[in-house]
Length: 392
Image (tube, rainbow, N blue to C red; front, side):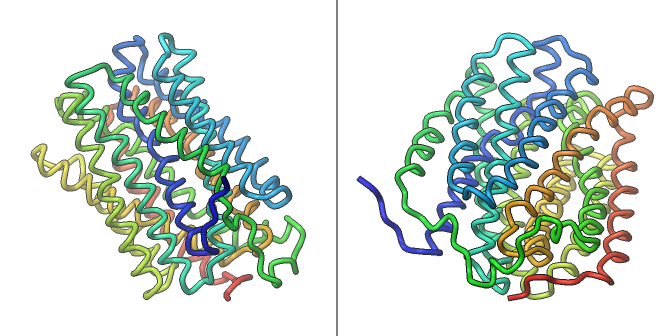
């Protein structure tokens, strides 16, 4: 039996639910880095590749999937991403050596760009720009909710069971949703008449969009530096237990739910680019403040403010990408945007790990501060010449 749901609104909500499930495993392997170091006997530099190797695979898949979405449609790409999410989660739960751990996380990392390219392209095509920021805010909140539920299971499971169960427990609901997506008749490939006017991918790669991506790269390097090693910093330099560090880290996506919804509302009111600059400045202030916190409670508060501002970035970033690119090339545009994020995830962890080996984990905070500030300046300079392709 085929399930029929109304056009547009439920199309967006189907993407929201998919985003919820695709983010379940997003940060779990990052939170588990201190445990991986002990269980698999890895150095900090070796364990950094648990973030870079899977992300490199995701980068390649992201570039290819963007072109495929614009040609064969979003649905098969989205379903493939959800299926890889299930398989990757099961493989990590059953792995007993480093190689299988890397392979399982690679499948999970590959699933993320497959969904984001197809899901964001679908949402941006069925909504007008004036409602897109608010919708993206809700969409991001659903992803943050998924990441939170995935992370919040860790401290509970670490107390009562092995960490592997935290991956295994989510494979069943994700599999059920994947099968349901195959049955749902929703409007994946809606295209207004004006969407067919521009057909070349080259129109997406123009100066304004590239400058925007480069300025965001500086921010993302600063964000990834802290987000990758924050639990290691809490455990190794601040003396917290793995369970407490995981709990603090898990609250970040919960804060992301609030920040995503508020970002959608505020971004639509004050303007995407102005709002983006403000929250990047907030992220920089929190980044430099974290190592100076005198107690665990204040450390947690400042880190959660950092999570609040950082998670707010995705809403205006997604909306600006839509504004700078034609409707019928959104799959390719979002693949470039996601690929920028993937590249940052590939190069940043081993680079920061090497720097840390020559100093300490503390050094990542001033580095992040400088990079984020540079991103703000680059964004302010580049926004002077933005030209919007789609402003409907």
